[in-house]
Length: 310
Ligand code: UDP
Ligand code: MG
Image 1 (cartoon, rainbow, N blue to C red):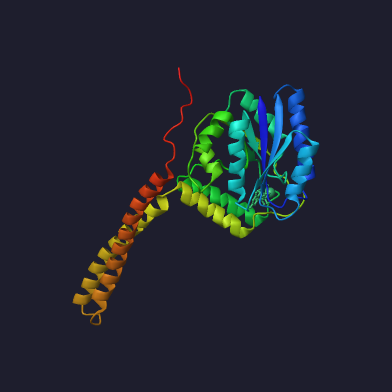
Image 2: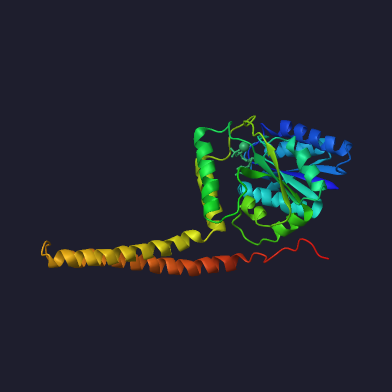
């Protein structure tokens, strides 16, 4: 059996030598324990501006296990990972995706392979705690997972992109035709047998984070909007709420009017502001419902995957 480790890299020249030796060590361990027949480290250079690609070339000529793909421009972490997984769906029996900075524990790879050999298709790497994160990152990340679940997107709590996927789940994944990628959600929605492996996440060993706040926010927004049309439905509800408030305002306004405690024009203004506001919101929400349907249709996601057949 052939195992590929897919590593997206963006300006990771400082990390690559160490990452390579760690990953090769794990692969050799797996090979000598006869758990896999062949191990590959596939680096996907996501349009780096530093010596990342030269390094990948040097490593590939030194070690036969190392292979590389170079993207022509910086397409983003998720797209780079996708490129690697697409390659793995054809060339390997299973793929593990991991970041180049080795923040995720490479020793968890052994447990993942064990679970896979035991018949599990997808093994999620889940962080035990977030001690190494700043307070800010910890709270924003946890808030994101909660919001995502509340909005109906399937995400595994505290799982990022460190996971093993079997060949058939890779093939299922690459049959998703959409361009907006939120891989952790897409993989969780496949529905094949899954397992979780817990590990401690470390500090980045060298270089700095390639995910500044701006990229993190746009990633979170992408995640929500590519998995949930519920925000659109909430607009309809808000519109209804405003119309209800306008009913209350009508009654209140009329009562105050007949009591003579008001200046001319106030009642009609008060009532129309709430009523018009509510109607507009509801109308926008209803349009949103249709857009949500169109959105799902244009994604043309596969309808189902068959897990077993007898
Ligand atoms: N990465 C990438 N393209 C990008 C940004 C990041 O391929 O545009 C890669 C990066 O090289 C690393 C992984 O994505 O392997 C995760 O990035 P990083 O460790 O900087 O994110 P953090 O751990 O800080 O969230
Ligand atoms: Mg990192």
